[in-house]
Image 1 (cartoon, rainbow, N blue to C red):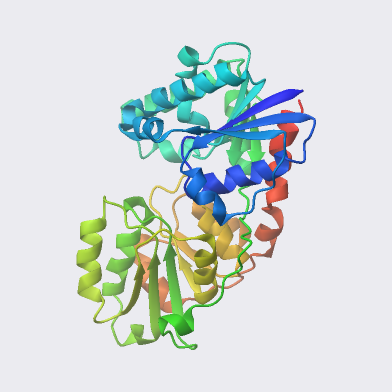
Image 2 (cartoon, rainbow, N blue to C red):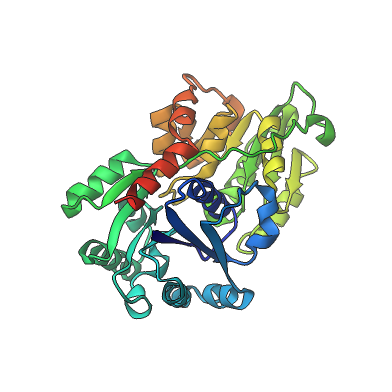
Length: 376
């Protein structure tokens, strides 16, 4: 019986969702055995989703000490993660390892993972877009990482998340067939959620803008607050802006300073907290438009899929991968940073048609592609 070890050293957000998607498909594959290795924080979060029990699936958890050690210092996180993975590979002796985030152990797997085990995993970043934002040192590291992935016979399938074009580009540029397209699935929560307009005191005829998720510098959170200052308070009277998700330390002080200077003149609502799936669903149902002006957008975003699922147009910045998705699938508007205030006031979305994106980005499509790799 083939044994596959699924590994992730993080558990929040899409990490939990992806583990759940793969787990629910794994219980159907009774001719294979699966070991899921993830942080023990999973035990606190698993109640957010329904999990099917099966004798061919088991969990092994990274302890709180292991998790803290891995994430204490960024420059050593990959080696610490590889070491933790190596311990599980020696313990369970899997035929294959699947990494929810592919680069998280490269190249330190050489030191800590022995034997003929094959490794596959998901690549989130579109390298050509990412390189332009990196220092020369980090560019070199990225290029060497990809060279190692391609040259090593240990690495089998390199799944490029949500881009047919970059999958083809990588295979052509590196003269390989290792890169495989993988759809970014739209999560379906068992709790549908309800509109919160009544609870939040938002009139039914108001236009509601939602900025959702962990808020930090690259997410463009501060850019939204700056954009509001360019909108006359009188024009913004019928607009409500919801900021929902944890405010990260890199912007917390500046965020609260700017937010405090605006909240008396604009309709602002803040939920600085961890959001269960039901709450996120309710917020999507509440809003009219999703704001995601991410900087350095070189990877897929679950917010794009959720906005499409709830039939809400999204505003992103024109440079980056999110803009490619928005344009290709007619999901909203991609604008220049300086045009964000005008886009918020205008809110015109000609040709908005998210149905194709929803149809093509299912959980079944995601797991079928991954499990077809396990069958090889």
